[in-house]
Length: 580
Image (cartoon, rainbow, N blue to C red; front, side):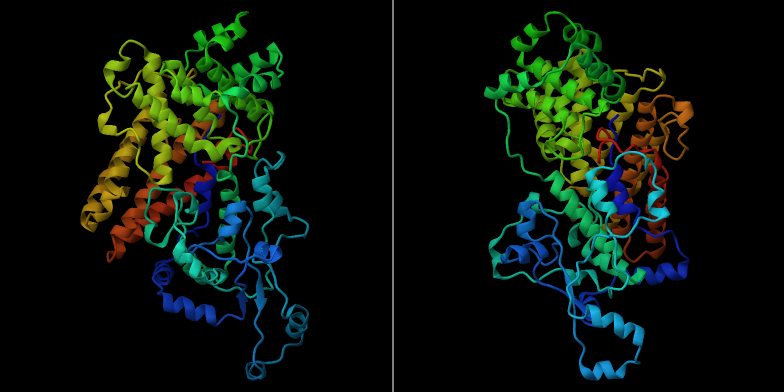
């Protein structure tokens, strides 16, 4: 069953150390306020330096440059979706400096073999994994390529660590001619001037530098650089072959599924996905999908055909048809049939089935296999919803499916916008569509759609008040007041959730029963702590000069980090688990 926000939330939270004593906290806070001069001095005092060209550009013998000095990936590696690493070389000391240091035979022997040799920033380890590294939850499952890449990260302890700022090469004159686009923005690494945003990006280079000084090494900084490169290579993967409507017949013929297998995929969809995103009338859908006239329905209605194959693709993820690599796997091949009809959906006649088809495609876009086109699918679903005026109450007074479809679309779009730092295309103040009662099959008293829709409305309001472009001009006092109101609204939302699913309460897997109920409890916790972290960050920024308030919000952020770490072991390493 899809879940939200797991890996990236962990990336920027689990790197925080547990609370220390007040004395150590004050010292750490001072480190975060280091100016650029201190950073440069610390870099110049190190005994190694980074090359100005990355390994890939040096191998290809091309010029290596970045758009901005603070970027962690060069332009060439970004375009080629490659891992960008800058090797480090030893700086020869002067004879005077060497004679001033006490002679250490063992150290001299080690330096004689490594002097002048270039070493990668984060070399892959060839050592046998230790017992600690193997003691991961779900270690019996085959790890994803992304996890294999991250698990292979190891830091050579013999290498003298330098500050993270030194790994960024200086940009040449070409920088002035290059313009920054949204696609160039880091995914995890935050801009120095925009750390307090609602997006998942958190660590800035300045904070990583201060953290490296506190820890005494740069392993966290280098790990974040590797993760940023790995994530960017997957979510910003270019679509090389986009199927067109003319390819529909060819794509449909390539899907050779027996009737029994199709029935299993549909059953898995309604058991695992439908409880979380309940926008399809199961009885009506199965009536067509399992009828002898299926071929007539598929050939006569492009929208229903796209919906049908999107449901098949989502259900097939629970039958080992998924993949961690973009645009690959059996599920993606099924989804290509829906994708070939995508232009007909967005340019054709607006109907409820067309909106449901794009909604199912948007849900599939949340998975690893189609992350690069997630924003397109979600944005088009929101556009169709506004075109049909689904946000207005009178539009769906007769058909509850109309209402459920709108709220699923709005929930997907508002959460995506909040996590990427942009405003929703559907203004919350322009919504009058009622929320129909939709309960889980095992918990008749839990109106899940009401909880999901309330969360979507809440984060849209919070974004406008605290994270929009207009809110940047507000005074710190107003931002503190707005943040307090948002904290209160978040706690009220949490209290409206049944105790079995409520954040702050332990997850009892044996009591929740089915796997989708456990996954839903995890998803609710990630939703709650995602907003809590964003509010804590903006409150810390707005409390400059008030050390007591800053400490309180830092503790709030650390508590959320712990709460996320505590449920990580419940997350399955499977392609159907959503990466966000």
